[in-house]
Image (cartoon, rainbow, N blue to C red):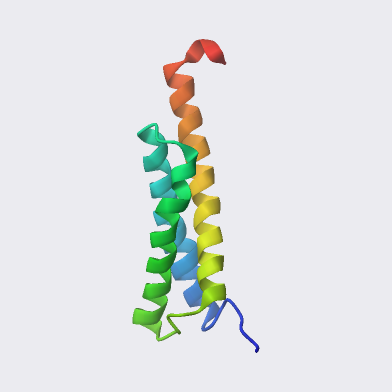
Length: 102
């Protein structure tokens, strides 16, 4: 079975998964951090984002909807971007709220 995580055009993968999905994941990670919620919530927020990215690939570009490798790649990308955004936003909040700890 020759399945690649880039099932169609690489430009579609870059545009939908990396750019749109990355921006949505960044916003979600920052939103979780700005409300002082814990880091363990990020996988719960990331799963619907990964499925939404896969849905966009299917609905707009005709790629297969049930592509497990592609969903896992999108989920990993979502978690990575959310984690970076959460860390940056949470660090800023802690620095602003508790300046004597730095």
